[in-house]
Image 1 (cartoon, rainbow, N blue to C red):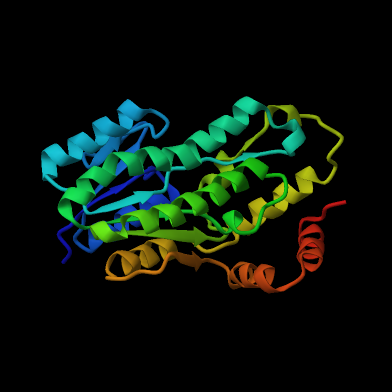
Image 2 (image 1 turned 120 degrees about the horizontal axis):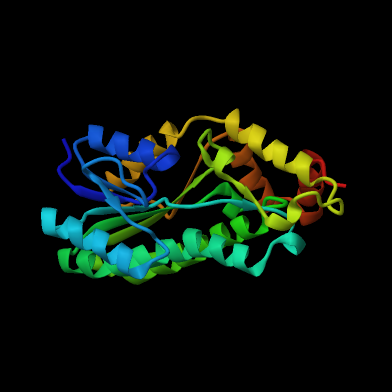
Length: 264
Protein backbone atom coordinates (compact mmCIF):
# COMPACT_ATOMS: atom_id res chain seq x y z
CA UNK A 1 0.00 0.00 0.00
CA UNK A 2 1.22 3.46 -0.92
CA UNK A 3 1.50 5.92 1.97
CA UNK A 4 2.06 9.13 0.04
CA UNK A 5 -0.04 12.30 0.27
CA UNK A 6 -1.82 13.66 -2.81
CA UNK A 7 -3.71 16.81 -3.74
CA UNK A 8 -6.20 16.53 -6.61
CA UNK A 9 -8.11 19.62 -7.70
CA UNK A 10 -11.68 19.42 -8.96
CA UNK A 11 -12.76 16.15 -7.33
CA UNK A 12 -16.49 16.79 -6.99
CA UNK A 13 -17.17 14.72 -10.12
CA UNK A 14 -15.76 13.11 -13.24
CA UNK A 15 -12.07 12.52 -13.76
CA UNK A 16 -11.08 14.18 -10.49
CA UNK A 17 -13.40 12.02 -8.42
CA UNK A 18 -12.30 8.84 -10.23
CA UNK A 19 -8.63 9.67 -9.65
CA UNK A 20 -9.23 10.40 -5.97
CA UNK A 21 -11.16 7.15 -5.51
CA UNK A 22 -8.52 5.01 -7.23
CA UNK A 23 -5.51 6.53 -5.49
CA UNK A 24 -7.28 6.19 -2.14
CA UNK A 25 -7.89 2.49 -2.87
CA UNK A 26 -4.15 2.15 -3.51
CA UNK A 27 -3.39 3.55 -0.05
CA UNK A 28 -2.58 7.14 -0.97
CA UNK A 29 -3.83 9.79 1.45
CA UNK A 30 -5.83 11.93 -0.99
CA UNK A 31 -7.08 15.45 -0.46
CA UNK A 32 -9.56 16.50 -3.12
CA UNK A 33 -10.73 20.05 -3.65
CA UNK A 34 -13.99 21.70 -4.51
CA UNK A 35 -15.49 25.13 -4.09
CA UNK A 36 -18.15 23.32 -2.04
CA UNK A 37 -16.47 20.39 -0.24
CA UNK A 38 -18.66 17.51 0.90
CA UNK A 39 -16.24 15.17 2.72
CA UNK A 40 -13.62 15.31 5.48
CA UNK A 41 -10.74 14.78 3.05
CA UNK A 42 -12.07 17.39 0.63
CA UNK A 43 -10.76 20.91 0.92
CA UNK A 44 -12.47 24.13 -0.05
CA UNK A 45 -10.37 25.58 -2.84
CA UNK A 46 -11.04 28.00 -5.68
CA UNK A 47 -8.15 27.69 -8.13
CA UNK A 48 -8.85 31.20 -9.45
CA UNK A 49 -8.00 32.68 -6.03
CA UNK A 50 -4.38 32.81 -4.82
CA UNK A 51 -5.33 32.95 -1.15
CA UNK A 52 -7.76 30.05 -1.45
CA UNK A 53 -5.10 27.87 -3.10
CA UNK A 54 -2.56 28.71 -0.40
CA UNK A 55 -5.03 28.02 2.42
CA UNK A 56 -5.78 24.58 1.02
CA UNK A 57 -2.14 23.63 0.68
CA UNK A 58 -1.31 24.97 4.12
CA UNK A 59 -4.10 22.82 5.56
CA UNK A 60 -2.57 19.69 4.00
CA UNK A 61 0.87 20.52 5.33
CA UNK A 62 -0.52 21.15 8.79
CA UNK A 63 -2.17 17.72 8.82
CA UNK A 64 0.39 15.64 6.93
CA UNK A 65 3.70 17.52 6.92
CA UNK A 66 4.37 16.70 3.26
CA UNK A 67 2.87 16.63 -0.22
CA UNK A 68 4.02 13.99 -2.70
CA UNK A 69 1.56 14.06 -5.62
CA UNK A 70 -0.33 17.00 -7.13
CA UNK A 71 -2.91 16.53 -9.88
CA UNK A 72 -4.20 19.68 -11.58
CA UNK A 73 -7.59 18.55 -12.84
CA UNK A 74 -9.99 21.44 -12.11
CA UNK A 75 -11.43 22.83 -15.31
CA UNK A 76 -14.43 24.25 -17.12
CA UNK A 77 -15.59 24.30 -20.74
CA UNK A 78 -17.05 27.28 -22.58
CA UNK A 79 -18.37 26.73 -26.12
CA UNK A 80 -19.08 29.16 -28.89
CA UNK A 81 -17.62 30.70 -32.04
CA UNK A 82 -14.65 32.91 -31.24
CA UNK A 83 -16.46 35.93 -32.66
CA UNK A 84 -19.32 35.43 -30.21
CA UNK A 85 -17.19 34.70 -27.14
CA UNK A 86 -16.74 37.71 -24.88
CA UNK A 87 -13.42 38.78 -23.39
CA UNK A 88 -14.83 38.05 -19.92
CA UNK A 89 -15.84 34.51 -20.92
CA UNK A 90 -12.44 33.91 -22.51
CA UNK A 91 -10.62 35.16 -19.42
CA UNK A 92 -12.72 32.93 -17.18
CA UNK A 93 -11.87 29.90 -19.31
CA UNK A 94 -8.15 30.63 -19.14
CA UNK A 95 -8.23 31.55 -15.46
CA UNK A 96 -9.59 28.18 -14.40
CA UNK A 97 -7.92 25.81 -16.87
CA UNK A 98 -4.51 27.46 -17.23
CA UNK A 99 -3.89 29.92 -14.42
CA UNK A 100 -5.57 27.61 -11.92
CA UNK A 101 -2.91 24.98 -12.62
CA UNK A 102 -0.27 27.73 -12.61
CA UNK A 103 -1.33 28.91 -9.15
CA UNK A 104 -1.26 25.42 -7.70
CA UNK A 105 2.14 24.65 -9.25
CA UNK A 106 3.66 27.85 -7.87
CA UNK A 107 2.34 27.07 -4.39
CA UNK A 108 3.52 23.44 -4.22
CA UNK A 109 6.93 23.72 -5.88
CA UNK A 110 8.76 25.08 -2.79
CA UNK A 111 7.40 22.14 -0.78
CA UNK A 112 8.51 19.56 -3.32
CA UNK A 113 11.92 21.18 -3.74
CA UNK A 114 12.53 20.94 0.01
CA UNK A 115 11.45 17.30 -0.05
CA UNK A 116 13.65 16.56 -3.05
CA UNK A 117 10.83 14.64 -4.74
CA UNK A 118 7.28 14.84 -6.01
CA UNK A 119 4.94 14.37 -8.96
CA UNK A 120 2.96 17.10 -10.67
CA UNK A 121 0.42 15.72 -13.14
CA UNK A 122 -1.54 18.18 -15.25
CA UNK A 123 -4.75 16.90 -16.85
CA UNK A 124 -4.71 18.25 -20.37
CA UNK A 125 -6.81 17.07 -23.29
CA UNK A 126 -6.52 15.71 -26.80
CA UNK A 127 -8.30 19.02 -27.45
CA UNK A 128 -4.98 20.61 -26.50
CA UNK A 129 -3.31 18.76 -29.38
CA UNK A 130 -6.08 19.00 -31.99
CA UNK A 131 -8.25 22.12 -31.76
CA UNK A 132 -11.99 21.54 -31.40
CA UNK A 133 -14.23 23.75 -33.55
CA UNK A 134 -16.49 26.10 -31.61
CA UNK A 135 -14.40 25.61 -28.48
CA UNK A 136 -11.51 27.97 -29.29
CA UNK A 137 -10.81 29.16 -25.76
CA UNK A 138 -11.08 25.68 -24.25
CA UNK A 139 -8.57 24.43 -26.82
CA UNK A 140 -6.41 27.51 -26.22
CA UNK A 141 -6.32 26.80 -22.48
CA UNK A 142 -5.27 23.19 -23.08
CA UNK A 143 -2.70 24.08 -25.76
CA UNK A 144 -1.22 26.61 -23.31
CA UNK A 145 -1.17 24.01 -20.53
CA UNK A 146 0.93 21.81 -22.82
CA UNK A 147 3.59 24.48 -23.19
CA UNK A 148 3.61 25.43 -19.52
CA UNK A 149 3.97 21.81 -18.45
CA UNK A 150 6.74 21.05 -20.94
CA UNK A 151 8.75 24.04 -19.73
CA UNK A 152 8.17 23.27 -16.05
CA UNK A 153 9.30 19.68 -16.53
CA UNK A 154 12.67 20.92 -17.79
CA UNK A 155 13.04 23.39 -14.93
CA UNK A 156 12.42 21.09 -11.97
CA UNK A 157 13.76 17.67 -12.92
CA UNK A 158 17.02 18.41 -11.10
CA UNK A 159 15.03 18.77 -7.86
CA UNK A 160 13.60 15.24 -8.14
CA UNK A 161 10.19 16.53 -9.29
CA UNK A 162 8.53 14.69 -12.16
CA UNK A 163 6.06 16.70 -14.28
CA UNK A 164 3.65 14.89 -16.59
CA UNK A 165 0.70 15.58 -18.90
CA UNK A 166 -2.26 13.22 -19.17
CA UNK A 167 -4.34 14.00 -22.26
CA UNK A 168 -7.78 12.33 -22.23
CA UNK A 169 -9.98 12.15 -25.28
CA UNK A 170 -13.74 12.39 -25.00
CA UNK A 171 -14.70 10.95 -21.61
CA UNK A 172 -18.12 10.27 -20.11
CA UNK A 173 -18.29 12.85 -17.31
CA UNK A 174 -20.40 15.77 -16.15
CA UNK A 175 -18.46 18.15 -18.41
CA UNK A 176 -21.15 17.66 -21.06
CA UNK A 177 -23.91 18.96 -18.81
CA UNK A 178 -21.70 21.65 -17.30
CA UNK A 179 -20.39 23.09 -20.57
CA UNK A 180 -21.50 26.70 -20.89
CA UNK A 181 -22.38 28.18 -24.29
CA UNK A 182 -21.13 31.73 -24.71
CA UNK A 183 -23.97 34.14 -23.94
CA UNK A 184 -24.01 35.63 -27.44
CA UNK A 185 -24.68 32.24 -29.04
CA UNK A 186 -28.31 32.28 -27.88
CA UNK A 187 -30.51 32.54 -30.98
CA UNK A 188 -27.52 33.36 -33.22
CA UNK A 189 -28.01 32.46 -36.90
CA UNK A 190 -24.59 33.24 -38.36
CA UNK A 191 -22.67 30.09 -37.45
CA UNK A 192 -25.28 27.59 -38.58
CA UNK A 193 -23.14 24.51 -37.92
CA UNK A 194 -22.53 25.41 -34.28
CA UNK A 195 -25.38 23.38 -32.80
CA UNK A 196 -24.57 20.26 -34.83
CA UNK A 197 -20.86 20.45 -34.02
CA UNK A 198 -21.59 20.88 -30.32
CA UNK A 199 -23.96 17.92 -30.41
CA UNK A 200 -21.23 15.81 -32.01
CA UNK A 201 -18.89 16.71 -29.14
CA UNK A 202 -21.54 15.96 -26.52
CA UNK A 203 -22.44 12.63 -28.12
CA UNK A 204 -18.79 11.59 -28.30
CA UNK A 205 -18.34 12.41 -24.63
CA UNK A 206 -21.40 10.57 -23.41
CA UNK A 207 -20.64 7.54 -25.60
CA UNK A 208 -17.00 7.57 -24.58
CA UNK A 209 -15.25 5.60 -21.85
CA UNK A 210 -15.72 6.48 -18.20
CA UNK A 211 -13.06 8.35 -16.24
CA UNK A 212 -11.67 5.21 -14.58
CA UNK A 213 -9.16 4.74 -17.41
CA UNK A 214 -7.61 8.11 -16.60
CA UNK A 215 -7.41 7.15 -12.92
CA UNK A 216 -5.61 3.88 -13.67
CA UNK A 217 -3.19 5.72 -15.97
CA UNK A 218 -2.52 8.26 -13.22
CA UNK A 219 -1.52 5.43 -10.89
CA UNK A 220 0.91 4.10 -13.50
CA UNK A 221 2.44 7.57 -13.83
CA UNK A 222 2.96 8.20 -10.12
CA UNK A 223 4.46 4.74 -9.57
CA UNK A 224 6.99 5.21 -12.39
CA UNK A 225 10.44 6.49 -11.49
CA UNK A 226 10.87 8.08 -14.90
CA UNK A 227 7.47 8.83 -16.48
CA UNK A 228 7.16 10.26 -19.97
CA UNK A 229 6.08 13.83 -20.58
CA UNK A 230 2.81 12.94 -22.35
CA UNK A 231 0.25 10.15 -22.08
CA UNK A 232 -2.92 10.08 -24.18
CA UNK A 233 -5.90 8.03 -23.04
CA UNK A 234 -9.36 7.44 -24.42
CA UNK A 235 -10.98 6.39 -27.72
CA UNK A 236 -8.51 4.76 -30.10
CA UNK A 237 -9.70 6.85 -33.06
CA UNK A 238 -8.97 10.09 -31.23
CA UNK A 239 -5.56 8.89 -30.09
CA UNK A 240 -4.81 7.89 -33.69
CA UNK A 241 -5.87 11.35 -34.87
CA UNK A 242 -3.06 12.85 -32.78
CA UNK A 243 -0.53 10.85 -34.80
CA UNK A 244 -2.29 11.62 -38.05
CA UNK A 245 -1.99 15.34 -37.37
CA UNK A 246 1.76 14.96 -36.98
CA UNK A 247 2.31 13.19 -40.27
CA UNK A 248 -0.48 14.17 -42.68
CA UNK A 249 -0.70 17.47 -44.59
CA UNK A 250 -2.67 20.08 -42.69
CA UNK A 251 -5.20 20.37 -45.52
CA UNK A 252 -6.06 16.69 -45.12
CA UNK A 253 -6.47 17.04 -41.34
CA UNK A 254 -8.67 20.11 -41.74
CA UNK A 255 -10.87 18.40 -44.32
CA UNK A 256 -11.35 15.47 -41.95
CA UNK A 257 -12.26 17.77 -39.06
CA UNK A 258 -14.76 19.77 -41.15
CA UNK A 259 -16.42 16.59 -42.30
CA UNK A 260 -16.53 15.01 -38.86
CA UNK A 261 -18.07 18.05 -37.16
CA UNK A 262 -20.40 18.91 -40.05
CA UNK A 263 -18.88 22.33 -40.70
CA UNK A 264 -20.12 24.31 -43.67
